[in-house]
Image (tube, rainbow, N blue to C red; front, side, top):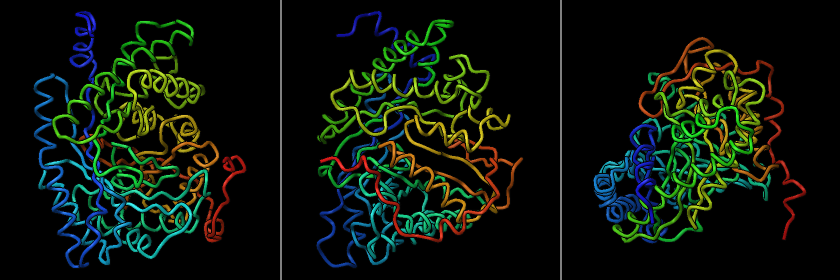
Length: 448
């Protein structure tokens, strides 16, 4: 039971500190669409999504009105599309786009392939179709898992993804390479992530699930303002208590959406997902701990504390905390990160170090448009290695902005924000990436 003081505190979090439920994401299993003639696959996929998610958006809006809790996005994730074996993956992607628009969600994730050990013909066909699909659809998002702690890293897939990202950027050059903002390359991808662009409905999931992502960087920063000068033990405890309260809001919304939609409750993902608006920044939380600017020495330690305390607080608030739960560091989507990148303190190398302890990885980073495909592949390989060795999810969502260089910016607007072009190392990784094959799994993966 909540007392009057806790209710007022939650209302203050919503009204003054930008607490919101970032997304209600319905996961939908598309495997029942596979049996039947190939020519009817897209129609069966469209019909299944629109039937299952018909009431998702109005139900979310109704909960928002009744409880007074902002629910920013309503989304869908589907079975990794490569598993459907479509002969025309682009047509399948367009069917997913039509279905998402028909039910009114803002994004649909799952134009995805899981190739951490090897690629099937269907996997490779879908991956090669990603640039055209993302360039010719509006709300479809794509992800590819190229490595796991158990399997190692599929370097053939890594090499291919560098080429795919360059192609996707070129096809949307008039939008600063916007297609790349809808594409994530993972290591150790999770099956119940409600956040885009990396969400998909995993093969271990049921027919459908409701997963909720809740976010409150502004709430955490406001809480830390009350304990300035206190030791880190107090800082960690303050973040844990705040994360607990934030997660309870997500739990309430998730349970209610599950009941009204008659779809099983999956997980609550407590990820501090920032926005470009002032007062909603993960970078500003780190600076509240005492850093002059994010990216300076001490940033990785501050982020490690934040990420761990968020998880500890969240896990006590719900029996099903999952997804990615932690702190996101997307450059273009965080006003503090944008400021730090513009000052030159937040570099690609520093961001890579931060991914060792954050919730995901290199996220929404703009680089020069003339960056070679093999350099992008090498960036992916580095990030996958961090995930593989540290048994955590890592990812790369990077935008080689066509025609732009260091000193320029890309502007996407809305939650995707804007980002300054960050320099990459000029030295070549061509021969490294050309080797192909598979980087073996680490010795500590042999646990049975």
